[in-house]
Image (cartoon, rainbow, N blue to C red; front, side, top):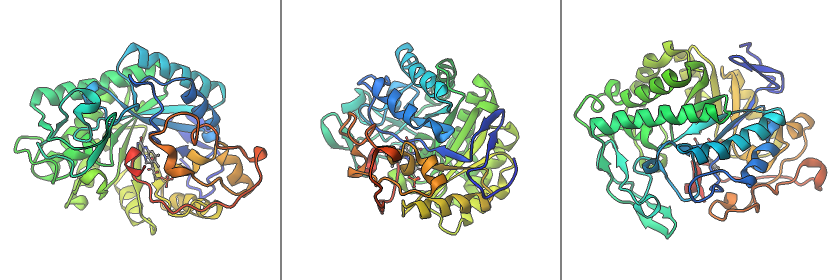
Length: 379
Ligand SMILES: Cc1cc2nc3c(=O)[nH]c(=O)nc-3n(C[C@H](O)[C@H](O)[C@H](O)COP(=O)(O)O)c2cc1C
């Protein structure tokens, strides 16, 4: 891939030709039906944003126990697959390409939502409340995963990946970031295991590596991305040895020829991006965590990402609030402000499919200083 800081120039991702270097980051919006099936509103939401070129569909659970919150999307039944197929067909007809993020919540889950005891590397509960259909509830102590659970969970990820491809996605992104199950294995404070999946960094990376390998075996490595958030403390994880952990993980995965590595980090001077770039020979997607959502700041951050060695730039809230983000950035036009803390638990079109395109509104300046984390916790 050519190195350029012109993020609006055409790009490639493996065999996909992309119209520019911008990618829509995964954005959980809790608009699925109760069983996790995407409905018509989600078709509209993603189609509106198809000029993203590459869209990463929101975190979707590969099995029942991995569900984090009510009304998040899933991909483990025929019905889920059929619902997602309506999304991918509409996005493709509108000229977009789409991957789907696969996310198991691990301890970020609650029996009031799933009817099941959450599972995790070790019985260490989330030190926070969790949103459930009955409101916010204290987290419960998760059950420590057995070797059989570990094998079965990797197989669930692989099966979900096969379903995603059958549903028309070009590939999947394995979510090993932001304190969810895979990140709980990476982080020392949530992984207290004494078997081959716990202890030093080289053993804590094993579960993420095995899940990624299982998914790559299932659908081909060129259809598989991996998302990481080194040093992130979202959802109560603490790594302590970030400097050893990620080189160990990347060393184990770099010969797999994955479609991409997706790095999210609040890193204004791009140090972490440059470090990971040096350790990763494949495609790198950089997702800067923005503190200023103006046209000028988003433009600067996208250029900085490419200058730091990223091949593509993922943006979250700018796409959330601007269905025509790419056009606005081309024109240097103002961006819509992000409304109402993403209207996360509300459901419906409000704050979801009703963000106007440029021609449908009077220009307004945008400024939003909410720091993004992951999914409903920010609401
Ligand atoms: C409403 C919302 C939902 C999110 N959902 C996800 C998700 O499903 N998976 C994920 O990995 N990150 C998720 N994130 C994090 C974003 O992908 C992104 O990393 C973050 O918003 C920083 O990028 P930005 O500054 O461009 O918004 C979410 C963020 C927000 C604001």
